[in-house]
Image (cartoon, rainbow, N blue to C red; front, side):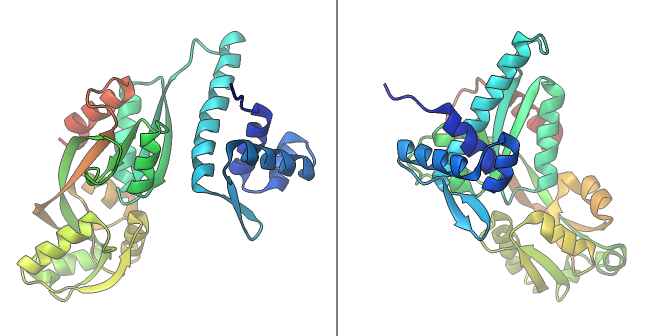
Length: 299
């Protein structure tokens, strides 16, 4: 039986957390050549490169990301064991490792996870954000308990997954108070020629909006396209144009970005899914998340 050298894994974990060998040296009180040599030994034993160098930074490879997530679990469990043995805890908390597709609105993801924490106070959340295909790859090797996405897992992936619809939301256009006052009148016809900010063309929401605009013969002026929903909203906050967001998050968006509602597109429905590898859910925190989503968040 092959055994993993956990000292090597610890050095790797520290470098991955800090991004440089120098910072890991300070944490571990070891010389740089020692840590570099141990990481090379770990890569040789695993048969995979774990880092690539970009300038002074060490960036995790795809296999490095997977190894780091396992290392996070391993050393967290070790700390739980010490705490329990030394009387600092009553037991190990439930861990919920969630992958969030990068196009899912941050405020919505936060509310979903907050609802889970309220229902299961002992849950320890570990959240990762990435593209859907990468998160599904991590789900396949059980590095994640579930993936939160705005689309079902595509049928072309090799691993069997199950899509659990959490709910859906209409779309609202927001803008600064000055722009909102101007374009709220005669909405949605007022979108014709209006300055708007949209997600990039690879996003499901963009395709939904493009289809809706075409069907209603509306041609707004696209000021910018953004892959990250938070960056899009930040530009909208600065008054560069109207921008879309989930209707269920209207209050939070208006409060956080100091904007106003322009109008709602109730017929445009954005759906959200929890993707798992099991059809019948067993993880108590996953069950709590879906219950909260369907009852409180996306009801």
